[in-house]
Figure 1 (cartoon, rainbow, N blue to C red):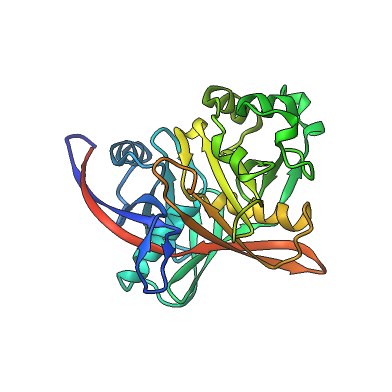
Figure 2 (cartoon, helix red, strand yellow):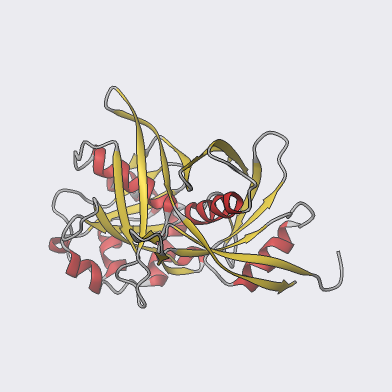
Length: 302
């Protein structure tokens, strides 16, 4: 297709924090493009680059699910995106395109359930798979490499847990930090993180602490491999973390509340709720979700 075209992208914040009076703040902005059936992969990549947010979701019709969603960062396709999924279905609900109950999304990685509950959107993730540091050397990565990429010493980690690779549909390096102040002052080496992420096929790092938070954990996320220096809400990472809290740290709760974005500059506080699906005390799947809010819309030329 030739010539310049224009398309409307809504800017929708996923995983916003809601006050008691119903007002919202924080969250993680995503681009949402409806009626994307006629767009090529190259078109979508160009549009995502023009929108300039960490992820943009493209919504088109599906022959098997409620909707098809394609996700792009400014530099590549990504199989799933939590905050962009929450943003998309929150917008579809506000527009009257979906109601309460179960719907679904088709993605390049297969279908996933979506549940709408009292205006919040929850998305399905798979049962966790864990890889510990002894499983990485064949890919030239060690636990010390993880520490070096974050400028951390061994005693600045939470002694209960070494860095672990977790996959519930996408892979993240989950790193437990000793305390909130250490988490706040971390200055990541994005080049090293990108290199390690490439070797281990990670979306990025998800750092957390259980120190000084009313939630079950407060977090930071770095994904320079996908042109994301830091993100304020990452639903696809909160799922793996909730599994770590349950399986590794033995926090035996079926619902986990994860905070993110508090330590960014400027701060953008976000709240992600993860409901674990359990069978005989084993995680068989999970639903991660929260609220979204439409913030703006932009005309994009591509």
